[in-house]
Image (cartoon, rainbow, N blue to C red; front, side, top):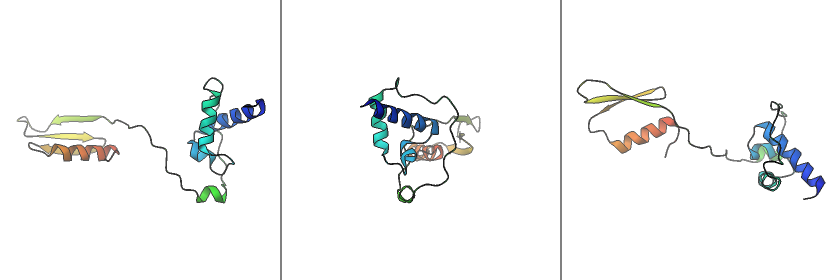
Length: 128
């Protein structure tokens, strides 16, 4: 990588990190792809690719026709765990209330555990 190319990619990486956008969103309408941006990060290394030091600058309101037509799925996020609080609804233990986020589920003895798991995952936003 030449000194000029190195400087150009270092600047692009800095702008990308300051934007807070995914690589796909940041490169939309630019003359390079998200994969090239990621490649440059791997080549420059973390110590050479500056991290943001200021608040992100506002993004331009207009995008090119090419960027608007391109449909890119969002970057998958790591699973998020939400607190699940369980408490007994009656002293005999015949039923209990499971709270997931703002939802309350009354669970009785003999519940289909697989179905309950699916419901909890759906409420957490995970699905299957």
